[in-house]
Structures are given as C-alpha cells and as structure tokens.
Image (cartoon, helix red, strand yellow):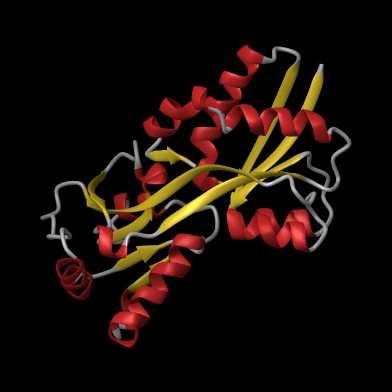
Length: 229
C-alpha cells in the first residue's frame, strides 16, 4: 500500500474528498490522506519543511513554493478554476448583485461585510480600493480567520453580506447564495497541485495529479461549483 500525505486549503476540501474516492477506485493500492487548513497556514507549513507528498493550493502559492525549492519544479498541475459567490443570511432580503454597479451599491448598503484571508479576499480588497470605497466600509468588514468559512459567519448573523469561493458556500445551512459576482468583476482562483520537495514518492504524486486533471473528474468538479482547469 502506498500512502500519500497531502495538504490543501479549505476551498478544495469537499472536492478533494470526492477526487480521492475516485482515485481509490482507479488505484486501490494508493491511500491519500488529505489535511485541509487555511491556505496561508498550509503554505507556511510546507515552507517550514513539514513532510508532505503533495500540496494543493492557489496557483500563485504553488509557484512560490516551487521558486523557494519547497515543491518540485515542473510538477505544477492546474486542477480547477473557482469563482467567488455572494451570500446573505437565510430569510434576509436579497440585494441586487446582477451588475457591477448593483453589487457596489449592495456593499455600500450592507450592515456588515465578510470575506476570507485567502486569494479571493485579497482580490476583493483590491476591488474595493479600485472603487474607492475601502475607507467608507472599513469599519463594517469582518474578515474570517484562516480556515473559518465565511458561510458560517453569515449563518450566525455576524455577516450580512459575505463573499467566498462558491465551493465553500455550497451546502452551508442558514444562508442564501445569491449567485456569482458579476462577470465584469468576477474573481477566479486557479487551484493547482504539485509534488512537495519532501516527498519520496514523486511519481505516485504525478500519477495522482494527472488523474485528477483528466476528463474523468470534470463532472465532479462542476458538482462542487468549480470548472476543470
């Protein structure tokens, strides 16, 4: 039995659970152990030299690990593209988010706003800067701690208008997902896998990532609110 230890961000946790099951049917002699934490924490642990075989994070984080010698050069495999969705507490009056202008007005009108510390949150903050509204809304922003889903904060009433990867909003009780960000301002994150520099099973990881990037997994990715890379 080959055992592969993998670390990932929370955004891909449900997806990876299904992808692991698919691969087990394909390669019954391979066990994949997945640990999902906040993406920032995952990258820090890999940078610190903790032993993993595979890393699945946002593509820019993977590129940094490769540049720093913590993941193998040439091993990056893009797996999915993931967009950001908007949600409100269940039962709340849904604001119009159908256009960039409507979204901006909804943000300006919201009692509290929530987003993550991950790549989508970083890009959302840049969008607020571009709109020139950062100072106006700063006191109303509730930034989720690494690994804490924004959907949970919305369900608990701490956040009136929340933003996170659609994959992390799906299935969360107590919220209503309004839909994706308008195309004009949609934030898409590519999640990729790579072979960790600490792995002694590089070929097994490459085989795993090749399967996960194949057409066989396309429907699974769509079911989790993502599209194949």
